[in-house]
Each structure stands twice: as structure tokens, then as C-alpha cells.
Image (cartoon, rainbow, N blue to C red; front, top):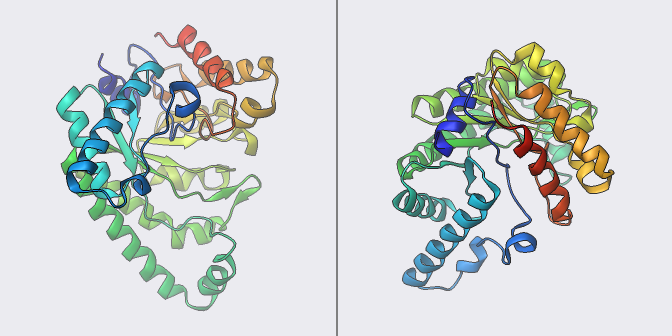
Length: 309
């Protein structure tokens, strides 16, 4: 199978030749491969010719990095829409359909940051109709952007609005159904109709809204956060026949746990995610900067030893 075929099989709840792997974002590229990925700020003040040269070099470096890691899905981040589109086209030119390419594609409310949290809480109480109007407009913008990126070669989207803390969702299930769920469902439906896969990411304890997330019919749920008590064995039993599962390898253990704990977490995720297909191996968040690279390669070794069907 090609990388893209392997990912597509898992996302379609089929059994590929191997469990595919990728990460929502990979932040250890400098530590493991020598330099950082290009950021939008690196293009400031350059001529169009210089920008294109840097974007091509970066795309080729990404191919080197993600080939070495044996990813099936290649994440395109850190650039504006035009930069992502250019990168996707260049990768397609070099590799055809070997890879599944993914970019951010959400447009729903996430947990507000500290500057906006109080205002958001008051708004959903005082002017809920305005909040719904804003949610609808955000969803439409995301859908239109996703369609433009599909035209450029992106064939899957990570929907990255975070909804949950470790203790549960920021909004109650009832509020979630009003202010988020319909708009998430619309983004997913129209992005799928346009020809792309959808992978819904949220950290935290998703169990109180698991049914609503699955009702939106994404191809996959990502994170399955063990730090919040989300158990892939339980989620597989509940919804594994409806949605592909991605993640559940304990990110905190990768930073602070023992080698034994790291290996055990990776093995547990594979033992309970892999059977019957519909599973993508990855961490419960990302391999973040500051993590010791050998801890990440340790879980990849567990994956390599157990990935074949």
C-alpha cells in the first residue's frame, strides 16, 4: 500500500497492511533532523522568487523528515493559506498521491484563552443568538478555506478546536449541542462532500460529549487523552465501529514517565486500537519541543514491532 492508501483504509474503518502513523504536529525536527520547519515569519520581506525557493526547500525537507519517521499523513502547518497551498502543490508534483496531506480545518469555538474566557461566558448567557450567528459564520469561513485547500492538493483536515479539560468539557453537553455540535457537523459534512477526510482533535475528557462528536461523523477522533482518563479500550468498544481512532499514547509519560511506562502506553494503544482496523497510531497530543527525542523513537519502535496486520 502507499502511505495514502494505508491512511485511507484506517480512516474508512478498514484493515490496511499496517497500522499507519502520523502526528498532529511534530516539534522535534531540529533536534532529530538538524533544522526547524519554515514559519510564516521567515518569509517576511522576501521577494516572490525567494519565497518560492524557501517553500520548495521546506517541502522537500518535510518529505525527508516524515519519510524517515514513516508517517502516512503529512501535516502542513506554520504557514498562511497561500504557503500551505504552494507546499501541497509542490509535494504533489514531487510525489504524486504517495502521501495523504493534512492541514488545520476547524472553525468551531474552542476553550477560550484567559483574555476572552469571561467575555465568552457572558455572551452565551446574555446574547446566545449572536453567539450562534458567529458560530455559523466561523463554520462557513472554515468550509470555504477547506475547499480552496482541497483544490491545492490537501486531502484531509485536522479539526483542532479543543473542547475539554481533564475534568470534562468546557461547555456542558447541552450547551455543546447548541453552540458547537451543529457547526462542527456542517464543517465535517461539507468538507467530506468536497472530497477530503476529517480528523476531529480535542484533548481532555471527551466522554460526556463522545456521542455528539460521533454524531458529527468525522472519519477519525484524535487524542483520546489518557491524561484525562480516556481509555482507548473503552472508546473502541463504544464507537470503534463508527469512527477511526487516533492516539492514546500518553504524552505526559513521554516527558516524565519511566521507559517502562512509555513502552506500556504505546503497547496498550496498539493492543486495543489495532484489532479490526480503524486505528492510527500516535501520541495523545504531539511530540512537543523539550521532549527527549529518544522517548519518541521508543514508541515508534513499539509501533514498528506491532504494526503489521
